Image (cartoon, rainbow, N blue to C red):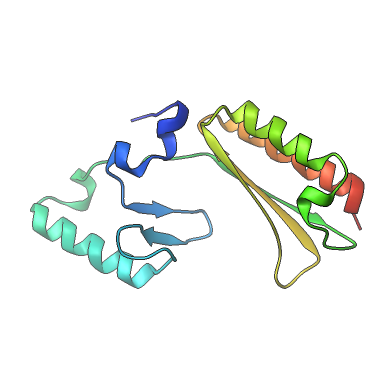
Length: 142
């Protein structure tokens, strides 16, 4: 199953309550807002048992391409206070056309800005993430 447009991230559209990230975080959206692998595993096992079908016969997961760029920075400035960055972010969001998301944050343990982009189109996700990372590096890079 491949979704496009705004419905890509709509759990109601896909009746999805289970989400995951390459980092290993798994979330049962109907039970908690944070990743809990043990809880997720127990519920997955219960759903498989209740269905009477093997795990391999269960519906497939929707794969969403995701790119994470780490940018070494000299200082942590709110992203929207970086000259020109708010416009760059709006332009990046427009490129995704509602079929993706951008998450920007600073690492809690390192002098890094993290740029995570996910969406339906892998090449577009890579391009958007690289473009935003380059803007941050140009202004704050170490």
